[in-house]
Length: 204
Length: 170
Image (cartoon, rainbow over all chains, first blue to last red; front, side, top):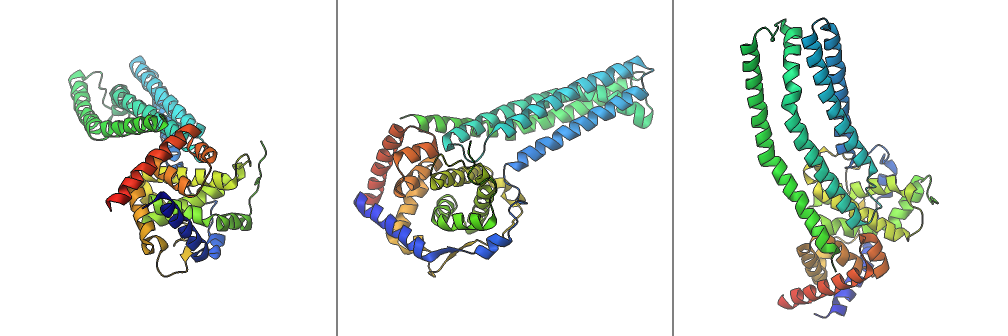
């Protein structure tokens, strides 16, 4: 089949669409398009939730530290938790800034896809860092919550502290290992594939 | 920057959609084979057009701008496939209606073959092919895709070659 036959068929197809296609205008009139959430609002909303969650944890730990201010050990551990919490909040703010910076819809396609792929790659690296940081976040939180919830001073019961920490750490690292093996690596490879495809597409 | 539609009223929006319904329909048809997904993509495109229209500044033709928004939405829709169920429908059914009882692409043999060929292309080449078939200028295609005009010409040449081979094999 010759090229002009194909393009002629496409032109006829366009003509048929012009004749036969219509839109249900009433449906559009009734649709509340302002209220509809678009697909890119989800990652932003999820980061907002993480940011608010992080701020709430910081506020709670600060409060606990102030309650236990007489004991410098608890106060110090509280400060460590708050500092690490602040790192999480900082990362959330960076991610929100990255998401808000992207003009999702009227940017040229290759440019947008490239921006999104690089943003996704940075997000995945942040996530990996956040997961590795998590045990350090957990360590100072254990004696604080133990003291506040059950009144047990874990500093006077080092073997119990060590046991609890090792237990929690073991579970957390198992989860981290699972996430890395089954989700992170797969997603990272997918992003790298997109970047490679975009680079190939841009080549003449 | 001049905004042409600083405040878009619904009737103006409907008239823009009416004038460009063919374009939206074809983007949905090219990127979604499944009817349910197609309806979701159609809704996503309508929502994005509604929300993005106040940013249209008239530097390019409205149809070029619409293509950019529709194709970007289709690309993102593909990437976020697992999240489609989270999307709450604001329009129950498709707003597109076809008067002829048979949907056009299945009816015309050449068009059906052409859609099957387009299906074999990667998502960027699909866009390129559709823009080419719709007789967009190389300059406009380059603007929509974000590549050089020379690159557009080279790629179209390659795809045409592949298409010729594909049709010869059938």
